[in-house]
Amino acid sequence: MGEWQYPKVRSKADRQVEAIRLAARRRNLNQRLRLAFIAGSEERSRRELGRGLTDEELRRTLRRYPGDLPER
Image 1 (cartoon, one colour):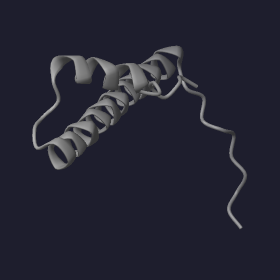
Image 2 (tube, one colour):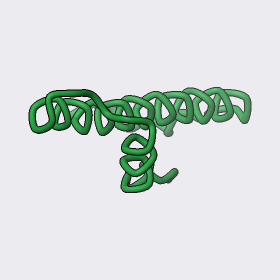
Image 3 (spheres, rainbow, N blue to C red):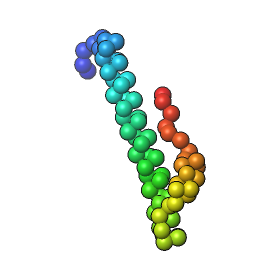
Image 4 (cartoon, rainbow, N blue to C red):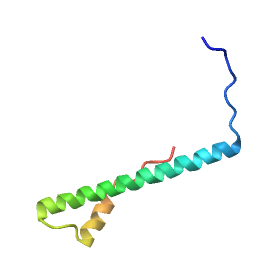
C-alpha cells in the first residue's frame, strides 16, 4: 500500500478556473442538445412532409424543447 498523503489543497483561483471551465462545458453541451433536438424535428418534417420546418413550426418545436441540463 502507498503512504497516506494529505489531500491536495486547491486555491480559490484554481476552483474559480475549474468552475468557469465546467460552466463552459455545460453551455456547449446544452447548445449541442438543442441543435440535435431541432435537427430531429427538421429531419422528421422532411421525411413526413417532404420539406423543412416553417418558421412557425420551428417556434412550436422550440416551445416543446424540454430545456437545458441544470447546473449542479
